[in-house]
Image 1 (cartoon, rainbow, N blue to C red):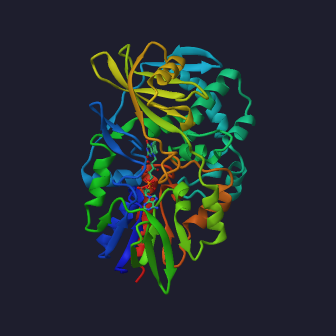
Image 2 (image 1 turned 30 degrees about the vertical axis):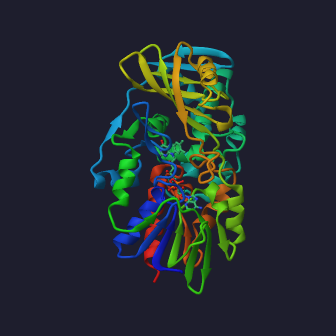
Length: 430
Ligand SMILES: Cc1cc2nc3c(=O)[nH]c(=O)nc-3n(C[C@H](O)[C@H](O)[C@H](O)COP(=O)(O)OP(=O)(O)OC[C@H]3O[C@@H](n4cnc5c(N)ncnc54)[C@H](O)[C@@H]3O)c2cc1C
């Protein structure tokens, strides 16, 4: 039997939870339906071998305004990690070693050329369509195509490609060049800050603490382990059907699931063609984030290698007993099976020899039907053809989520931004 809510939120990641809180704070009766048996979506604070780890999103930064506002509300503090003591980079199969400053200097030569024109294309980083004509010039290119326009020597190309692959978390021939430009613009048009926003500042108590604070800031009903099968709009209300056959009705629905998981929900009537095309296109990330517990020299290392199963590898924590926790990012989840420790050891030897793998772990976000990818990396043409279409409400239905954000799309901050917007919009529907 259908029950009446003011707002139903589908998806309990940062976007959905923020949206539910916003509606509940405005006095709306809210039901949140989450497919997994936990909230958090593509963030997941967990314990592993005595470490507090994040299987998904982890790093935040004070240039991310929505996240920092929530951290202030929740009274949570952040930690800043140390600079790497030693940096490595690969030119072809040859590994070169130096300081992080030396490597950054090589990266900068390619990076500066890659982002040339960014201030004209993205004059307002939180309004990506402020200069559509200028942006389209980049929006039509993949990262690989943009790299081909640059005059780089072999070392510059291999260093830049490794850096970009870690950001794209997928193939450079599929990821759109704008994703790099956006990150750069949002980081104050600075390479140094781009590196900092992407990997130096964490929430001390974990992302789960921030998510919990948002979820508990207002009373709303929530159901876990309840995948939604269909969302139907009819006669000024929405009916949401779960896979178990239950139906709930409300005045408005916010569907805050990952772009690549939207295809798993049936919409009745069908969404307009421009939205269907965007969903079919999806976003291009298909990478892996893995944690390795390893024994070896007590140094904070950072090593990069293009097309390696985890071609961006960083020491996250020196335990003090001759072991350390490393975090690796690779562009293709299919190339990395953390259950196969000898294979992980072989790959580690190829990027940072001298360490013994004790254990490794990762979550396969690509195979997971409720994400089908990691952080959003939009494909060419996204901003010209799909960004606005996906953000446009349809009657009493709105799509939300970091993947559709104006600012930090693909980050926790973008999820909160989108949840704030969707919550305000849905609360206004009577
Ligand atoms: C490995 C990895 C590393 C990352 N690193 C960072 C980082 O360091 N910093 C950063 O800011 N961001 C990072 N991100 C990105 C960030 O985590 C995400 O952009 C953000 O958490 C997305 O939030 P969301 O609410 O938009 O979507 P999601 O978190 O995907 O939430 C959507 C929710 O919808 C649910 N759902 C899906 N289908 C259904 C259905 N049919 N019915 C009901 N529920 C459904 C899902 O289970 C999920 O809980 C990372 C992501 C990954 C995967």
